[in-house]
Length: 398
Ligand code: PMP
Image 1 (cartoon, rainbow, N blue to C red):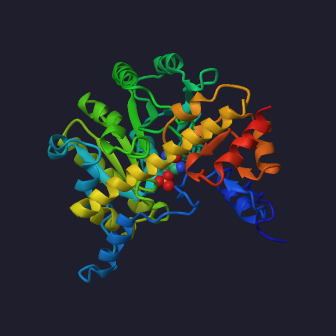
Image 2 (tube, helix red, strand yellow):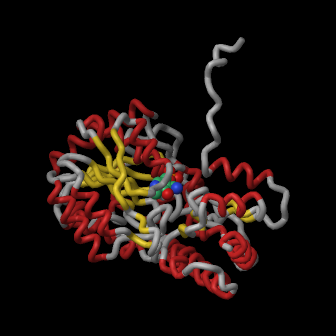
């Protein structure tokens, strides 16, 4: 009899479990639209050429050793990543506490623990949201509730519902917002709506947390995709950012990201950083070096940064092309329903609107792997499979 006999077996992760099933599927037609990772037009993972170049330089650099990094990452690595989010004058003010963390998920974990430490009681997240969000906050023993986000009829943003939801939030509670390219819906507030959201956060005295996992992926333009952060910064509010470099650098497995807290004063930022370091020290002591060195090399070498910016445009353009191709192919079949949302939505995902039963058919009958909520990763589409996917959506939707 094992001491583990009373431990129940957990279900596979809803997204990563699908990846395992996809690998095991022997059908030639199979298509993986489940995981949010970029694929080339040939359906292959892509090491960005800027990243490959930077990696060579990092490996060749004999001045580097394998010693531990500081708890919050190397100080010289912070400025270039802050510059993707904040104006120089704000950085120079010293009001930002920045710490390297384990990609977006690890950054959210650190922020969640810090919120608990601050005495925050509740976090409000959009409905729907990335499946890991509620669990990360629950793990930090925070209460978690949702505010309306998705409008089923228009397959767009339920802005009125969202604003009404914010009115229910109490002073000192945290509001989780996707900085750009909302996952899973692909629907973001407009510029004017962001203004109202920021004003409401101020009025309700909320603590905003911006999850920035897709900067550059929505429009291909970092500045455009960084709009929400700049707006929150210029509003003078204090807020957090969880910054991931998984998608925009294609560094998924290197686990590279940063926590930022924009504080009212330099003194507050110093205090916040001191406490973030305690949390990180106890959780995993110090962050990994390799991904941080690659990101730093790309961002501080002008030719590599130029390459990277072009690669971001290439990735986001390929996804936009797939949006157009999928919509055209579905509409050409006269599939029931409206399909403008396929091109209206942005970023990596489309929330197709397929029901749970229809998704089961897509997976079981057609070998097209997608999450149960009807989300598909547009990066998994390519010229060779888009017609097949459209045909199957057509069959499932009838
Ligand atoms: N936030 C959102 C909204 C995401 O979609 C993801 C990745 N799917 C993450 C955070 C975290 O990603 P990672 O930990 O790989 O950076």
